Amino acid sequence: MESKSPRGWHWHHLSPPSAARSSSIEQTRHQKVANFVVEISVLRSPPMPKPYSYDLRKKVIEAIEQDGMKKSEVSQLFNISRNTIDLWLKRQAETGDYQALPASTSRQ
Image (cartoon, rainbow, N blue to C red; front, side, top):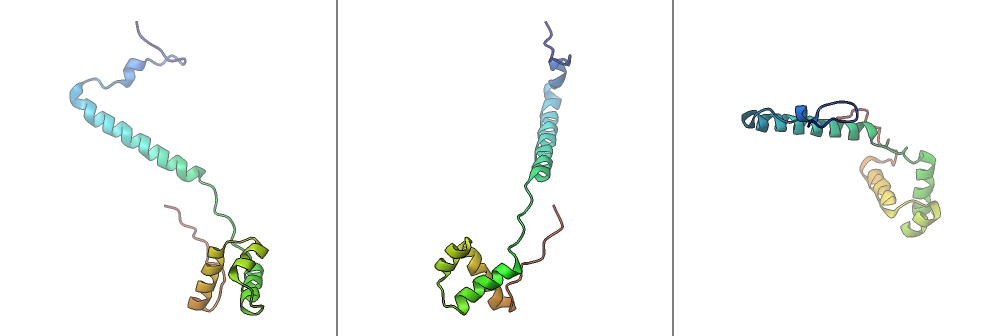
């Protein structure tokens, strides 16, 4: 007795016809599935959040440099991570500014 799917497709048609071709057919199927999964994951990945405003960055840096606040205090006050503050200070030391980096428009 042939097994049919709910849409009338015959399941035996999905099996490879011979053992000799089975290996290459399975590899092709697996590769197609893998490519499809990668494409779907790229299409469904959430967008990157918007960078913090320059105004907020300025207030955070001023609180540390001019007001003498500790980074941990500033991170709690502005509800941002210490790591974010460290990254802004590092960028300022390297480039002279703490401006957000330009967004990347290319997707691979």
